[in-house]
Image (cartoon, rainbow, N blue to C red):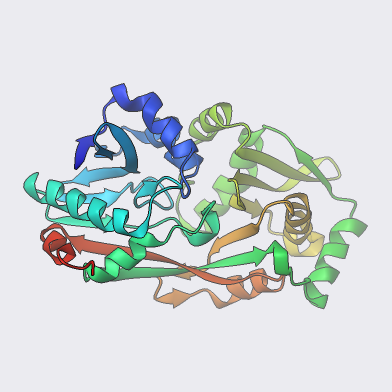
Length: 322
């Protein structure tokens, strides 16, 4: 009834069209996005067919005998269509795990797309994880504004926003990633965490050229000099700052508060504004100051879970339907 195939470039168009019309896929699963860092990962993405019809895809990479929801992406898991029902996902996961087990894969790590990114409720696979005795390895808390129930910023946050107004800060949407990367983002990450951005300047410029409707960039200027910036990722339902950073005097200027307030208003036609996680150490540590700052804008927490599944557990999906 079902068959599984490993992704090859011959499936490029079919894959991308399916993702675009899925109920829980985003532009991160487009092959052009997934493959910008193909030199870092051994792709092991899978397609599931019912007869000759594509019904699900799994963006993934392989390390030894372990397959991961693609490690170069923020989220992953099985991506499927609007007509896919609960019993279908049970059957698909049985076939998928059996195929992986037969292929010598011992474990599958998954990080399902958070529910706020779904175009239609799509947590069928989370129920299947329960049936499979999947191990919850990590849980992140995402700070999210629900535009349907928007909570107003606190008084202290409003005062910080006013500082940006008084300083006459200018916010400009522009494709100048290099200025932000070299003068703000890279120095800050180096100083605070001794790390580099996940994307190089060349990579983010390439991704912007391929997804200009889904990636936007804003710089903040004070007296003609850049003082802050952000790179936004936009999906059907969510606006998310992928990168945001400001100079050390950002508190005196109110630059980040002013910028976030602007972005929250700018993307109010979306369902949600996702600030991202405030957790560290595999979700075991909460950055209290960071989450508090996000909450003063009216954000509240939803969770993103990360699971591991033994491939030989496919047998557990037998006889679950009554």
